[in-house]
Image (tube, rainbow, N blue to C red; front, side, top):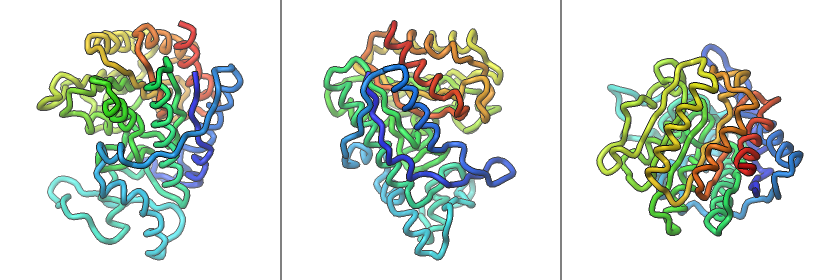
Amino acid sequence: MKTVFSPRHVGHSGNVELDTNAIVAAYEKPSRAQIIRERVEAVGLGPVIEPNAHDLSTARKIHAHDYLDFLESVYPQWLAAGHSGTAMPYVWPTRGVRADVPPTSIEGRIGYYAFDAGATFVAGTWDAVKSSHDSALSAARLVQAGERAAFALCRPPGHHAGSNFAGGYCYINNAAVAAQFFRDNGAKRVTILDVDYHHGNGTQQIFYARADVQVLNLHADPLQEYPYFLGHADETGSGAGEGFNHNFPLPLGTAWEGWSAALDSACDLVAAYAPDALIVSLGVDTFERDPISKFRLTSSDYPKIGARIARLGLPTLFVMEGGYAVEEIGINAVGVLTGFEQD
């Protein structure tokens, strides 16, 4: 299996985030991707290649044009306003206020295009975001050209980014861009299977009214866990998309037995939908020692995830999402991939 990886991700580093009651160094940091790459090479998974450059034409089909323009320009505007350091939102449009008029000041615009204070900006953020987008599209091209599977080692991740908002360390929704790419290149149906601990709220929002992209999420119950405001089982799509969105919210403390039962149910739905391509939003923050998550999967469980997905027999793109137990992230993420390859 080929891995697509851009060293430009390191530009997004040194930023901070709001973590409940404190400003802390971001949990989503460059070492996550470096450790995964080292593990890919250590196990001989396959070649590691850099992405080709891609324009934003596919991304503009799923993200608002003004939002993408904002992502590219936010940090220069931050500096021009006399600020330095990490650019972070501190006010957001919510119920009872207007959300249809973007502020002209950069301080207001950051909040307008965000749903939390986790997707923050430094000088190299946009270049890293663009390289992550390019990695997803380059890996998708490999699958579209006939590879059984490919791995987009994306950083920053993407599944919390919606059509017009950032959040949860995510800016461009890499899996969603890849899904649109497959649709534009002959796939009649595409499935996104999100196995991250946190619900892929951005992916759900983007495709909620579409029947051509099935979205399935296995995640912690939003009554108890971030992102809180999407991910319930009764969210099944709207309009043409009714019946094509499926959520599997699971209680805190879920271990392999309960989690794998949900995976089996999700895989049954994938098989019934019969997509032409499968995208796996690969988060490994389901790990028992992840610092910001509360599931109890062990390292020995991750190859079994890959093997179960492999049995679907579909062209498969793995797109890296979350996972913050940095010591084990390489073992767990690559474990899914080797389990897929060995099935």
